[in-house]
Length: 284
Image 1 (cartoon, helix red, strand yellow):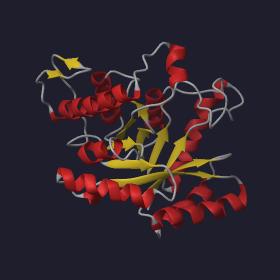
Image 2 (cartoon, one colour; image 1 turned 180 degrees about the horizontal axis):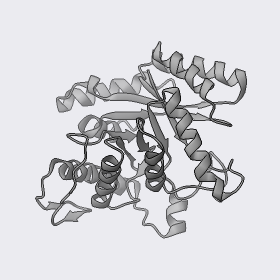
Image 3 (cartoon, helix red, strand yellow; image 1 turned 135 degrees about the vertical axis):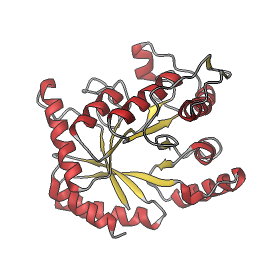
Image 4 (cartoon, helix red, strand yellow; image 1 turned 120 degrees about the horizontal axis):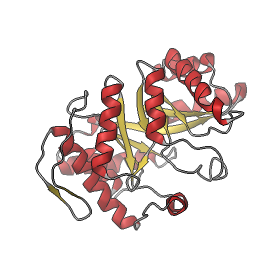
């Protein structure tokens, strides 16, 4: 099992000028501890499960570019980008730029999106759920086309690109890995089977069922299900009890077929705690 580290709460910094240095320190510790990937949420406002909307929240791809400059090995992605946040042609350029400047370490994390409050708050269009899923399919098609070097016009229902030029191309070939977040059985997991290099599922007893659904979708599209990484998330609570519980949860997730877990950590990012979890995960 591999581990990633997710940054979702920046309210611990005593002032805005300390957010950058503290994030850089945490990234350095995570990389030294053997963490495989670093993730940031892609939200405009803090989400309700983490705190009030007014809490500090960084723009996702700017934060990843900053983290790229602080690290040399870990992969970098959003967990996950709402499809309606950015035009797909621009999104492909952004992820490609991150990949080029980081030396081939970008991951496209994407999903249908959900937080209407932040979109309305900043004046970003918030289509219906059905429309967002249509946009998600078109976005995945556009990203793959741009990464393939095909400049043929793309004429979809929601997006039209006269010349989907992407220069420079991504360093990772055929493209940066694509992680699709969500466990919807009819649409999301079908898109994972068609386009995804990884799925991201909520930690629950439903995971084996979700993976069975994904396996059937893969069979339908003629794809090997083993090509797709199975990922989930885990909050590591503070203290020795929190660490012990995290170890149990990692074993529980591994037993259900999860091969990669993205950690959220309460309190300071400490190298010994991360090293312990990396070692536990590697043995699973």
